[in-house]
Every structure is written in C-alpha cells, then in structure tokens.
Length: 184
Image 1 (tube, helix red, strand yellow):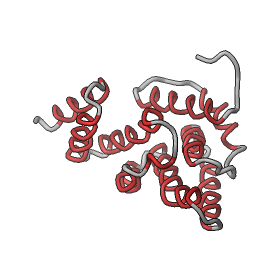
Image 2 (cartoon, one colour):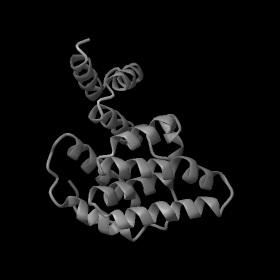
Image 3 (cartoon, helix red, strand yellow):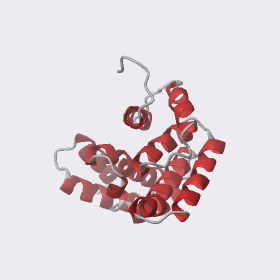
Image 4 (cartoon, helix red, strand yellow):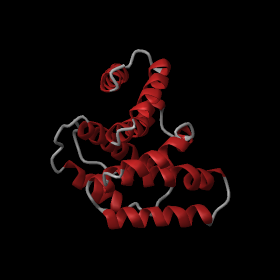
C-alpha cells in the first residue's frame, strides 16, 4: 500500500486506522503493528494533537505494548493538567478517554470501552482529523457494544449512523446484522 517507510504522524494514523479496520473485519494483519508500535513508543510524550495520540495508542494497544500504552495515558493526564487552553482541555477531556477506550478494546474489555466512548462520541470531532478519519473510533464503539452483547445499544447506534450516512455499506450490513440478531 505504501512505497516507503515513514514516521509522519498522518502516515502513521492512516496505517493504524487501516490495520485496525482490517483486523476488526477478521483479517490477519500479521506483524504489521510492530513497526507502527515502535514508532508510537517514541511519541508517547508528544501530545501535539489528540488525533495523532489516538492513533499512536491504536498501534501500542494492538501490538500489546501495555507498558508504553499506560505510560502514554499517564503522560497525557499530566500534560493536560499542567496546561491551560483548548488543546490541553481536548486532550484531557476527550483524547485521553478515547485512548483509554482504545486500550480497553484491544484488551477485550468491551464494557469499559462502551462506558468511556459512549459519553464522548459526539465530542470526538474535537480531536481533529476528518469525519472519515474519525469514523474508526465510532466503529470501535459499535463493535464493542456488539461484542459485549448490548444489541439495543448497537441498534440505536446503527440507526443513528445509517440516518447520518445513508450510503454506507458498512452501516447497513452492521445494522442488518444486529436486527437479525435481535430477530427484529
């Protein structure tokens, strides 16, 4: 998919998002997380953009780098507490919880993922990136709710998503899946 290795945050974000989606679709991505996690491990204290931090967390979490992931969460908390301004507030109130939810999801803790992501789902837009780029976070919430067996929540989320994006094949397939599971 790419011609050369890069450590640009957008390239890392795009790669992490792609791998996360492929993995979620049941595709074996092999050891591809390792390279991204190596790069992310060197950026656990950057905090220049919550959007980038979330993708670094994806790489760390997916590669099982719990120590680095926990250190990043601690660093995010300290960074947000020690500064004023919109960026620090976004990092503390949205970015850090988003990262915690991604880590919980990678660990298979779907209840925590839901508990953290559901209340901030409308605020995720503030972390940056495009609607399409941020969609992976919303899809993670849907997936966590499905895996946790919260079918009523999944149905509500999919109703909302399908109304907002009526041409999304993923939305309609997921919506149909949950309706069938509910015998609705």
